[in-house]
Length: 146
Ligand code: SF4
Ligand code: SF4
Image (cartoon, rainbow, N blue to C red):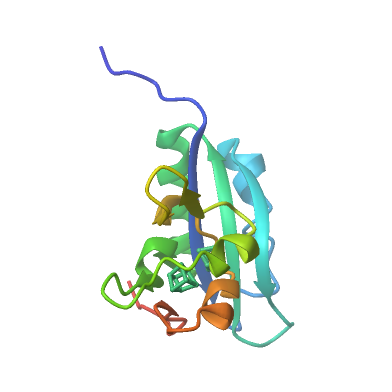
């Protein structure tokens, strides 16, 4: 029997072409697919290309249907994990970024004083890229056409 996983959560980066930016496609995720969403970052203006970093929660099956619906409406979707990178060789585990990270994607492991990066919690806010003294964190905000 297929297991129904409730509470599926994913952070995605959406790019809207100008013709989609005025339509309520994101609001329809709740109405049509019973998904909850939390806007973590937005850069949208009418009649211009826009972007949203969205945390979506619901059933995994509904999440995939919602993603399909967004794509049908011209929205380009990139998992946040494809946007943010840590250079493991450069990181000196100074911990500065952990104080800035709003989602606890970067946390200090006290037992060995290393900084753990959990990309699944990252919202691609970019705060860590601004404080990292060795530029170990990089955020690629170029659109990936999918
Ligand atoms: S601020 Fe940079 S060097 Fe320091 S722990 Fe974070 S990623 Fe590593
Ligand atoms: S971009 Fe950096 S500071 Fe922002 S949520 Fe991701 S890891 Fe945390």
